[in-house]
Length: 324
Image (cartoon, rainbow, N blue to C red; front, top):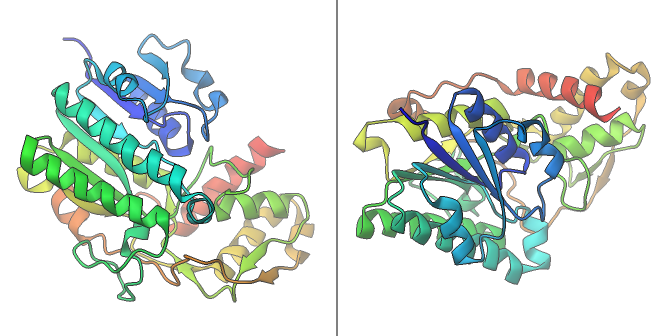
């Protein structure tokens, strides 16, 4: 029997490269499509010698590239996107082109290639101005950023493709994913690797606002599990829908910094004395985010392997050993 073939778009990025490693270790054949605009070639370097790995260098905004990449694939794990709320506010046009037009290209290519299932990275930003906690999949508010709009439109396109063309789709609304290989550099670096880098360099992390905003920070291994369960489920009630991909808890930014200082101080005690700077709130930020994961538990048998503190300690250990 030939191995099942997976296409991972954005496979050179943080989540994509972890998915690549995970499924190669699970004995799948993995093809990656990436244009390296935000991902890194070094994230894929360990796989170049693996005969089950293949790289297609190209852009999802090019339909023919998407068609080439998806040929012969059983599953698509679509991670390619321009992330970051601030980036989308600064450049909504490019965000729209990549996240909506590129997404639609991948769906058309997947439909035409008779892909078995299309699993895509959705976003907790879709909940927008909804103040309800925890966030439940069928109750959303108005988007607060161009990025959030693009991610909601992805869900609408996926629903139409499921209904109209019979393409099996599952959207995973990621909640503040963090862990190994998440890039601490760049203007749009995520908060956890950014704060880790600052503290390791004995610099003060800057919290936007009072520090009371909270997030359902989700360790990467939980995301890998959700992708796999979405890919292999045979329950027809579990497909053509969206799931929160999270832990089901929330942590304030103040609590985050306290834990980071505690864990990093095990390596460098002076880090415990670093002060925090408080800056203005960022436009487009959601005050609080906490997921209900009951739907994923019920339909996908999802059980998070890493609570926040466990995941954060594991991530800190990885950063200390890889950034020094």
